[in-house]
Image 1 (cartoon, rainbow, N blue to C red):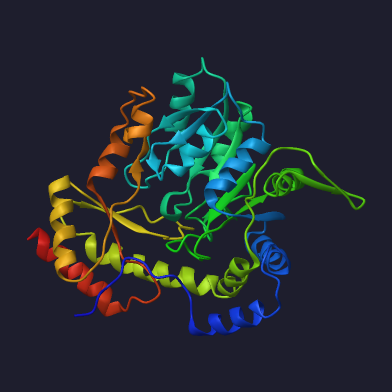
Image 2 (cartoon, helix red, strand yellow; image 1 turned 90 degrees about the vertical axis):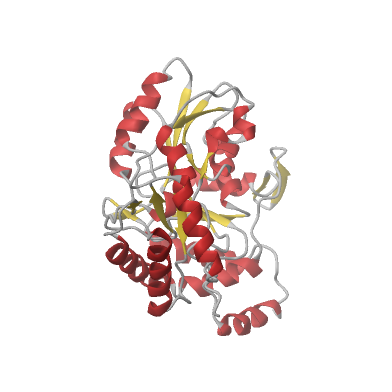
Length: 368
């Protein structure tokens, strides 16, 4: 019986040929492939400045640091995400303020974010991180206006959102920066890796210094202006990313087609809630939400017995041990429900229409 995987990296056989040719150049560290990728990324997103980093996590951390976030500050972070979003804030010495999310988009709404800000206005809130969970476009322009009105930095965690269009523009247009991930489950992959895009030339220049041990080069004279670390991406990784950028529109189209099939055929099932299908969604993942955890676990078990992989969605980060130990007692019921009852289904380029039909059939079998 065929094993249907949850995710497959969007690589093709010819990638190994080009990668082999690149390896023969002998240039493995950050160099021409990185430069080419940054140009490709800026052209695709129509955001003028870009740099690569070792991961989305390091990109978030560097962005926060270069925007001046430090001890004594606080940052608004969604409760339903991967913990790395909040961990980046912690490593800047700042305090995390969690906000709840919407039950059908899995992202925070403007009202939820405003409420979290007002409820904590005794703290020195300096920034908002908005996560485009699973590629959802969200309300970037409205959030940017809110952040401007409150003198907040606006950072988009776009780990899942390469190709996401919000308010007619690619993510990164309205914020201080958008940060991408190139983990194997993301839209394109280098195994690990990340990138930051921004409309601010200075911010990207500052990140370039801090990702490279704090090195500056003025008129050929190098110096170390900070005790920073190495957060660079190799040219091996950048080569893989460049190859996939040539196929990015096809990758996005395939995911959209699979999501459309799920939405059409799962929509009539009682006890199952589907994600909102807003224009501009990148569909990095497709998560459904059951009425209770028992149903979710029943379906997951039935899919597994039929060689179909699935997984939980994101985390209720405020409930993880690290943040529980910080005495954060906030109750954020929607994030908690999504964590307890959500299930991510397969969505990738190697799925056939028959595969998706089988997945849908097995979900229906489990619930009947």
